[in-house]
Amino acid sequence: MNLLKKRPEHTALRLTSPLGISIAITTIALSANFGLRLVSAQTAPQASHAPSGWFLTGSKPANYDTGVDKETINNGDPSAFLRSTTSSTEGFGTLMQSINAANYAGKRVRLRAWVKSQEVANWAGVWMRVDKDKTAVAFDNMQNRPIKGTQSWSMYDVVLDVPQDSTGISFGILLTGTGEVWINNITFEIVGGDIPVTSAKLVQPAKLPDQPTNLRFTE
Image (cartoon, rainbow, N blue to C red; front, side, top):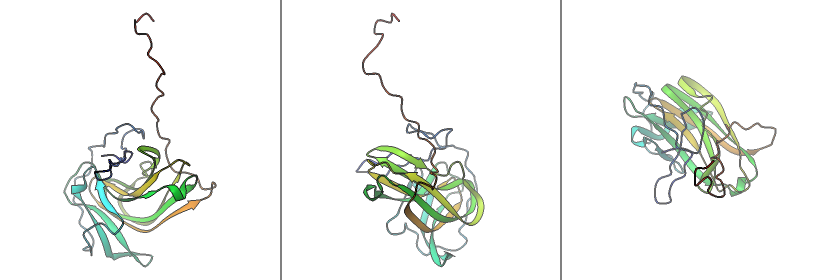
């Protein structure tokens, strides 16, 4: 599963979190060097299921849990949590949702969220992906500015351009390996061109030649 690959219509949404050297639309392996500690929630969550409008997926969704935590408050509101449920795990889990891109086509959008973490052994990040049909055209998962360890509430931004012919936007928070994160006070809005994008440039496949060449190996 990867955060750059869209799901088939009959299956759960497939995503990609590129943990390799570059962000590419081709298959990217996830690092196996994840932390080994099981993280317990600071308080018992009030609901052990994804909040309304959201869902849990990833490369190892069975190793993660999510829900609404009414005891962990920030700015007066409850938070959603995403945490590992095993003492060690490869891969990642993500709490996410997807929307139609029509209202944002040709615009620059900013996903802003407050996040806190507890004993994140590998890394976590807020992420957003813009799609044109089955192709990712913009993507950022905060890999170059990851959330690690135990951090108090902080605000994080992901800013992407949405091309005019875009068809979908997906976003959420991901957790690789073990640990726990809380997310709260999310905003999703159109911003001006003075706000810089945060995405790394996607590596596009090389253009294919129009016809066969050197079929007799004389060159």
